[in-house]
Length: 266
Image 1 (tube, rainbow, N blue to C red):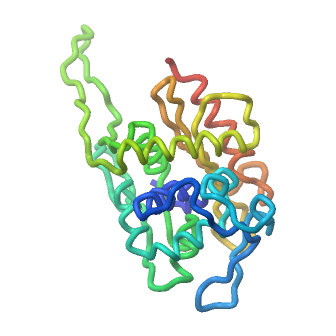
Image 2 (cartoon, rainbow, N blue to C red; image 1 turned 90 degrees about the vertical axis):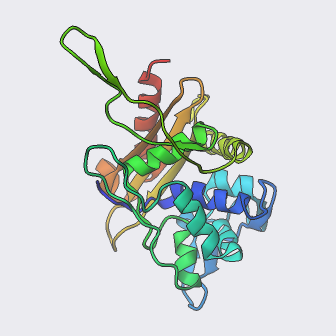
Image 3 (cartoon, rainbow, N blue to C red; image 1 turned 30 degrees about the vertical axis):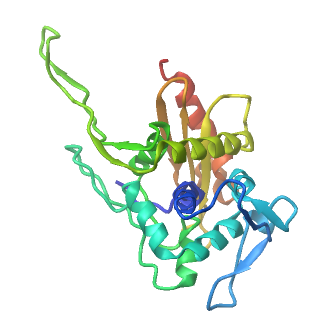
């Protein structure tokens, strides 16, 4: 039920908004190390203040693989807030599920101006997600764009093992088209290849490192799926785990997610 800032895993949502508004993996975006938030003098930077792929212009595919904040801010500002609102709703951000267990809705937050929109495109500001919503996002891409109703219990059996009830799959919506899901999958394959600890696996993934308080260690995320096993995961380690303020998603959450994917039966 924890509603936490997702950080860069939310770039999946921002990228979907981009695809639905004329962007392609080859669309050029800024690789500058920082970008000034609209209406302010405050710079928003890439990780460690680095230029993306040497700076200049970079294609969206590179910006996604390297998780370049400035590129996503530029794209988000060009699209406007309604594009981000639509994409977030498609993935169930702001929605509770009928699980039979308490669960939280998460939120995109208000987007009253350019500065708020810019920060939200990279999963910061007032954006929150639960681990369930993050897993649903990954699973929806893996499921060729169809978002399914999640459930906890697959079957109910009696003492003799007879099935008394079996949960039937329910499609909630087509979050993205099959073509868009395939494009995001390719981008997630590239992201995995650039993620700490990549060992030649066939996973599709995105990491996130979410700031949430001054001087606090970040929450770190890893969402992924294994197309060979039909399984998706979301991992969040709050406050950086044992790594503290130096933690980032690929280093801390990534190994946990990969272990789950490897342990899952084929």
